[in-house]
Length: 141
Image (cartoon, rainbow, N blue to C red; front, top):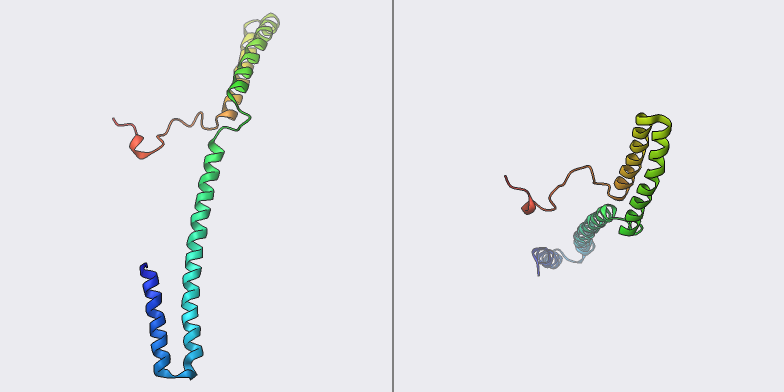
């Protein structure tokens, strides 16, 4: 039995004692008072439980948001890299042939840009830097 149960038990005994002393005319008021205390205790317990479950739900949602999607498999990323390199050859030839060095640079800027966008899409925290998962994992100087 925890402290709240002991407190509620004391309240019940006090209400019963008051009923014996005051008589039946105050019984309704005493019962209402005791039930109000029980109701407040139940409301508090429900509120704590709802807050805890909401916090757990938010934590789970945050973890799921950071996790890679099931469609972002290693094979998909590898395939994107291969296709990017295969397309880089003709794009380099066209850019270099038509625009010489500036055309080649524009073609490669586009290739790199597409790959950076894909990398950020599959790994949202890529450019935020590494942070330790826990305090005891922190880097020490």
